[in-house]
Length: 84
Image (cartoon, rainbow, N blue to C red):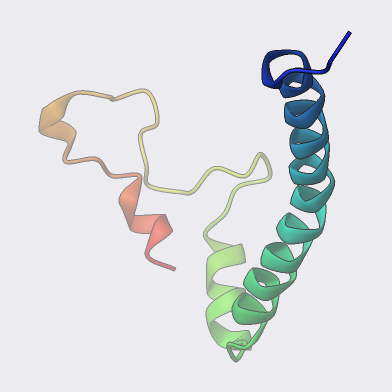
């Protein structure tokens, strides 16, 4: 039986897919390292960090924010602590 394109196509696709799957984790690792390096570039302001921690409750919530109020009139108070 002579191999045809139709009979070889699944094998070719399997090889191509395995090559792409093999390459992805390395690419993701490179991207992850670059993102972490970019984030870590910034200077840390100890006074600002202390202020943020002082405004944080033991459970991780922030003082002065009503987390139960999800109405539109609340003005999304959660955004205040994300500005830090």
